[in-house]
Length: 512
Image (cartoon, rainbow, N blue to C red; front, side, top):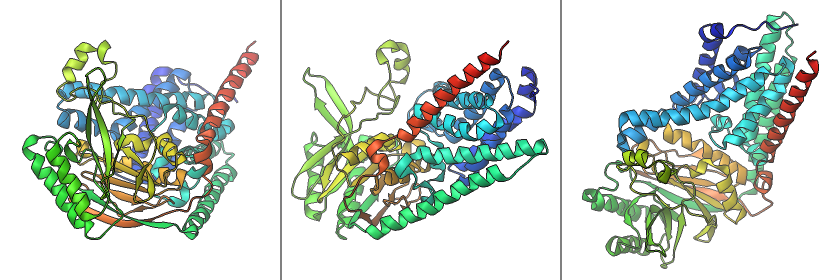
């Protein structure tokens, strides 16, 4: 049966555009701040219906519209970071955030086009394959993270990474869409959606078994105190508040040390000075660690003079122990336009416009060697580094048994940014079977078990110290994901390429 194809102008102003908008709204609802996580299982259904049988240009535009609206609705807090706290011109801030929205929307655009080339039956399998392949190329902001609060659902990440969860979500969407298409033609069968439901159910029951196995294995108890200083962004590096900021952290540290945890953690850039370069403040930190008898891991800026006499700045995390040992980790994944300006020398005029917000470039670190903390090899990731699976995986491959994420989300105000970043932590825990700790300046601080359960998340903008004990699993065989990485996602890339080429060959053969 030949599918009737509407003309391009009708698609833009009619029902398909409304379906794309509906998909965007449903997907926004699946993520914080709304947190209707299971809406992800049907959020793409309207888009899949909208692009069915459409011309390539129409499918591309519908996917682009859905993606742009979704990312603008979910990542709205980028404007706060740039305009409010970055002090970048409001109009320039808008232009800057439109670029990533458009770039990220291109992946949805390609997805819509690729699925529109599939027959209804093909789309049930190829829609998740294409989606995971595109997520693999994009490298972050994974759909599967919407289900971070359901530990049984995400245990498959120990094999596939977050890509496996994304695959299941799109598979269910495609199965529902297939059923609705068949129902419209009067030939609906529940077999396909029931099969999708069965696959999800098997995954959940298997995940429950994995959680029981992790809990049965036990481990070494490790108690940490996460200090949430709640320092306003406009005070953090203002010299007028330097003593106030440091004294707050020192006082909270002394109080936490009385309970004798194994580790006390401050957030990213908590130290309002250059540790090791400012003798007075540096000694204050060393003294509180020595007197309290508990190791301290804290974020701060590091300064060095390079071999050519140039100034070198790092966004770092330091570990100071009561016996005087000190180690440092330098952030590897830096934030564009926050910690460095890409292609600065090629865009001199443009960079002059934003130098009020970015005073020079931060140097990226290179090492993923864990740091010893009270006998436990600890990997450290700063701020949004935790959203990249490869970083945690590298630390654990080098022997880390615990991951610590320190961050400062005050940049984003009272927004969903911190909750969205937190979504990545359960996946890093499950992928590598290690606990993950998160200390955030203004929240959300939390503990995540090796099975991906989030414990004691703190409220935003609350000054507090939260203490909890996590179990560090015994050293055993690494997870499949930790050993082999994103092979499942790469297999989807290969499958997508094969199907795309094979489809092109079939179309050419059909031409007279």
